Length: 120
Image 1 (cartoon, one colour):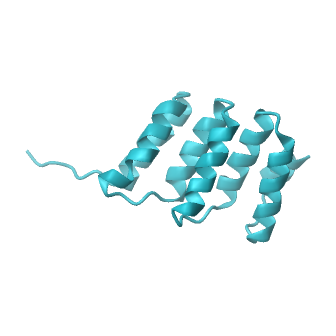
Image 2: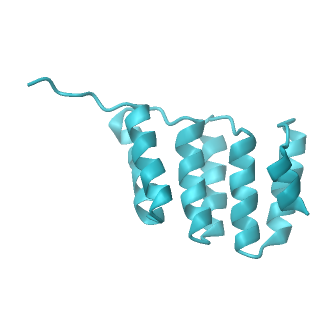
Image 3: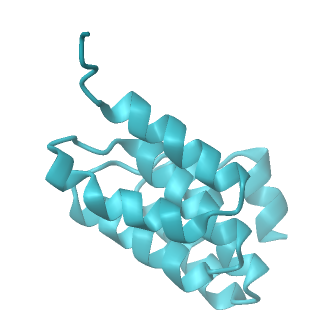
């Protein structure tokens, strides 16, 4: 029997399933375990965790995951920013959403129609 070496694609698949099923705690737990697994998380890894938190109206955890993304040296993309903005809006914390939008502009990440819709 051959063993399968777990990689970032496997982790991202599990995180995506967690996101779809409202398992934000499991998502964060896995995100925190990834470095010990000697796997480098990527943008998709963080986007899934941020979205899982946002979907559960855990905006503070979404913001914290977004911050840890930058601390890990993983570049946020439009989806990352949209996810954290959405989480802030769902949590009724518009001021944080505006701050994140400003950060998006500062980092020259291109907003999408979704970004503008959320900002309105």
